[in-house]
Length: 212
Image 1 (tube, rainbow, N blue to C red):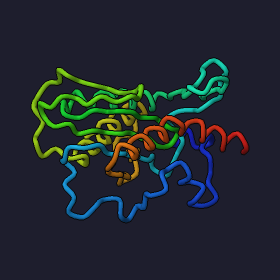
Image 2 (cartoon, rainbow, N blue to C red):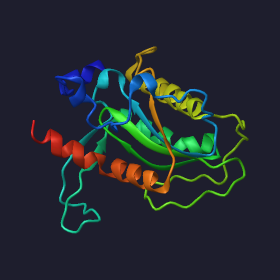
Image 3 (cartoon, helix red, strand yellow):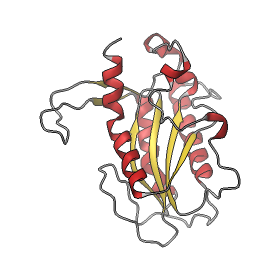
Image 4 (cartoon, rainbow, N blue to C red):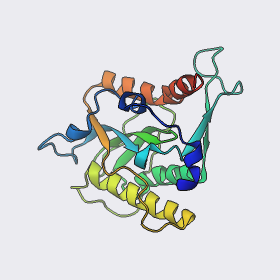
């Protein structure tokens, strides 16, 4: 991690640092008291790198990829070796937890956004219209019916931290912030807005940082 510090953007205030995190997130209240996070449903998850070091990828502009809006260019995400580890384990989530679907996700330089859907063991996977849907219909093992979003994120953070520290040869180094942000998606419109936000996040990052 520390070898990349010279390439890390330094933020002058908290609001600038958190601009790319959805505005309803408040670190002190990011868990609903008494809510059962093993309930079937969709969850918007954000996990941030410790001290917001920009180690996962670089976002660059390109004229080679065209978005849904004709004539507009979309940015390219160039994953680092650390970002590739994170990407690998995002794809592993539905293999480890066959009742979980990763509907869409984006790896940003210093954080990750995901929409995770708990569909229930043995339930058919609902359809969605977003391109980074990762389904697993033949996962091994039967997950506990009490598996929660917290269990899944804890496993994901543990595995990625372990592999990144092997790559760095830095055993015990913290990679992620201690907690994570979640938002329970309660409507189809909410789901659509969040997926759109995730898909457009690299463009917003590029637009902001191109002025610095």
